[in-house]
Image (cartoon, rainbow, N blue to C red; front, top):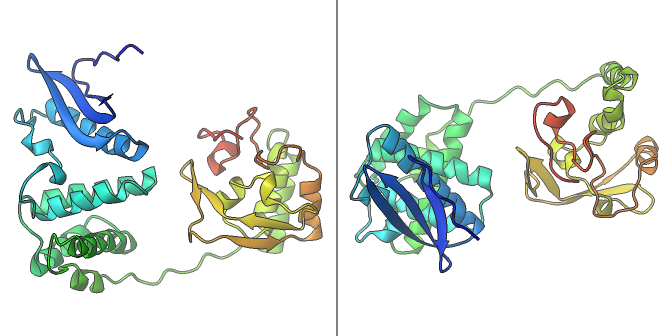
Amino acid sequence: MAKTKAQKGTVIVRAVKGRLRLVWSFGGKRYFFALELVDTKANRAIAELKARQIERDMVNELFDPTLEKYRAAYQRKGSGTAAEIFEKYIAYKAKTLRKRSLEKYTFTLSYVRQFFKKEPATEQKCEQFKDWLAQRMEPITLKQRVSFLKSAWAWAIEKKLVSENPWVEALRQVRVPPKQRPNPFTQEERQRIMAAFRQSHYYAYYADFVEFALSAGCRPGELCALRWRHVSEDCGVIWIGEAYSRGELGPTKTSEARFLRLTARLQGLLRGRDRRMRSRMIWCSRLPGVAILMTTIFGIGPGSRC
C-alpha cells in the first residue's frame, strides 16, 4: 500500500514494524517521532491525540523542535510530576477504555498540565487544583475528573511510582448538590406523543420505536442497541447488555446486564417486525442498513450499521 504523503502542517500516524510513529515537516525540516507504542486501536487513539497537539503547536508558534515536550512519561527517565504520573496511567488505561472515555482522561490531563506544569502533586496543590477546576465545570463533572486522578495515584502506588495518594482529601471535599428528578410523562402525554408519530407522514416509520421507548423501561441507548438475538422466541423477554453512547456501541451505563419482561402490547410490536436475522438490529432507520440512534430520528446525525 502506498504511504500517505503528509500535507504541510499535518502530522501523520504511521506503523513501522508494528510500532507507531509520527511523521511531519516543519520549518524545512522532516521529523520522525517514535512513540514506542504497539500498533493497536487504543494506541492509535493516543497517537492521534499527540499528532493533533503537535499540529496546534505548529500553528500557534509553540512547537518544540527538540520534541522533548511531546515525549510521554514512559519515554523519559525519572518521571515524577503530576502530569507525568497521570500520563502513565492513561497509557495503561488506554488498552481498555472506549474512545469517549479516553477523551475524558485526556481532557483532564490537559488541565493537569496547565495547572501543575512541571510540579509534583502534593495534597495542598491537589486541593488548589480542585478549587481551580471547580470554576470551569459542574460539580458532578468535577467529582468524576478528581476521581480519575485519585484512581491514577492508587495505581501509581501499586506500581511503586509514588508512596502516597494526595487526591483523597481533594475528592472528599467535592460536594455534588442533589438534582431534582425529572417529571415523567403522564399517560395522556404519552398517548399524544405516540399519536403524533403515528399520524405523521414521515415520522410514522418510527412510531413503534417511540412507543417501545416510552413503555419498556430501558435507556434510549440500550433500546437502540437491541438485536433479535437479545429477544426470546415468544418476544416476552429482552436481554439488556449493550448500549449506544454518542454513536459508539459498548456496555450499559452500569456495565450490568438485565432481563426485561414485556407487556402483551410490546410483544405485539416486536412480532410484527422482520426477525429473520438474529444479528440484525431491531430498530433500523429509514436509511437502508443503518440502525436508529436517537439523533438519526430527527436527521441530525449518522447512525451505525444494522
